Amino acid sequence: MKATLFIIENDRDHAQAKALIEKLMGSGDAADQARMVAQARLIEAYERARWPRRTPSLPHLLTYLMEQHGLSRSDLVPLLGTPSRVSEVLNGKRELSMSMVRKLRERFQISSDLLISSKRSRGLAA
Image (cartoon, rainbow, N blue to C red; front, side, top):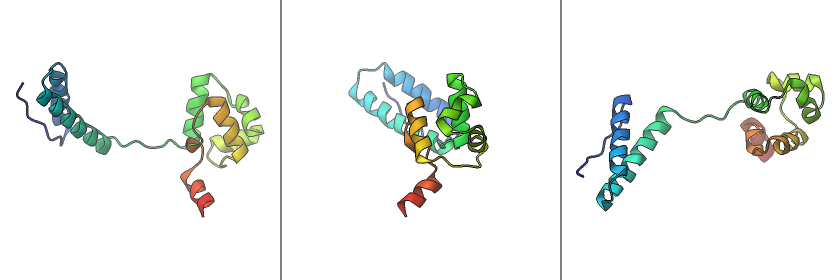
C-alpha cells in the first residue's frame, strides 16, 4: 500500500493520521509497518503537545481516590490523623507527612511520587 505520512498541525490532520494508522495496521508489508510506526510517533508528538499530562493536585488526587473506593472524609482519619487534618489536606492547606504518605500508599497501592508535591521534594533534596 502506498501511503505518505501526515504532518499533524491541527485536529483534522490528527484524524487523517489516525485513519492512516488504521489502514496500515492490516498490511503485512514491512514498508507499511515502518510507515505505521513513523506515523504513530508523529501522532504521539502531536498529542503530547496538544494535551500535555499534568500531575493532579493532592486534593484532586485524594478526592478521586475517595470516589473510586467509595470512601468519605471520615474514612481518611485513620490515614491522616484527625478530622481537621483531613479537612486541611483536602483543602490544600496542609502537605502530607511521610507517615501519611506511607499509609496512603499502602491503602491505595499508589506511588509515593503522586503524594509528594514537587515543592516538597525540592526542599528534601536541598
